[in-house]
Length: 205
Image 1: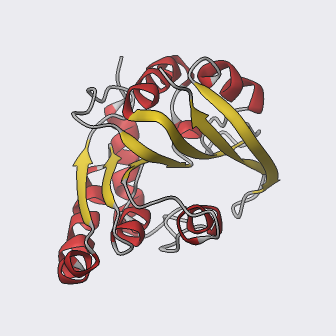
Image 2 (image 1 turned 90 degrees about the vertical axis):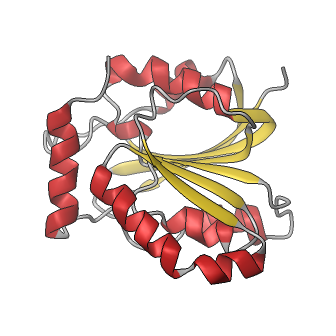
């Protein structure tokens, strides 16, 4: 089972029209704290799941990370590649790298080299519930033992035009066998409704 083509085209239309409130162009402080704070991670390999136009991959690439962004929306990936091309010289000077792939995040193949940092900034909450077991399998395959997984998600809401959302209990059920929850912070999403940040650590295997 894969994402519906109508959903993909709906997101393409959002990017064409500029109606993309999720695409702020600013990396969140939670991510920046993980890579620049007093206990910053050493630059390594980062996977952005549902990367949109590539903001967070580019931020980390400019800090010396090797970054890969994945999104199923063709126009988002096209724009991410355009932004990467404009910053190519700066990224090279920083010792980083960036690449983007159009793909279904619930069906990614196992990587040749796993990632030390994974980021999901509102992707899982938009994955149809029947596909979420595939998402959980993929993120477990992608993450190196000990990797940090930063997961931001919206709670379910009553607005049928919004993504289905997910609950803390569902995240624990989906990922608890492969990841340890280190921290969870509840808040309010900029678009309205409740949201949460989850700091998860890949278990050793």
